[in-house]
Length: 56
Image 1 (cartoon, rainbow, N blue to C red):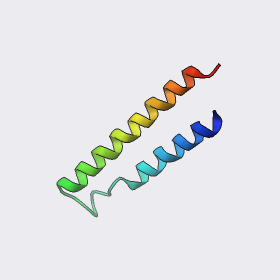
Image 2 (tube, one colour):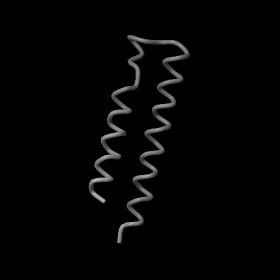
Image 3 (cartoon, rainbow, N blue to C red):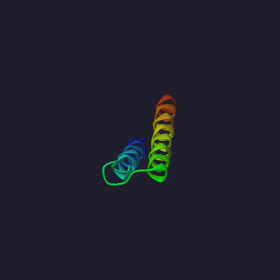
């Protein structure tokens, strides 16, 4: 379980690092990408929380 949790945390960290820097890239494409990455990171966090409840 620790390995799965670690993998999910790593994926969330990588998503946060991939979020565009608004000073370097702006506009609709940038904000759309940022919103998509935030949503995906949130879904991974929800998955982590659900997996924690399954551990005996």
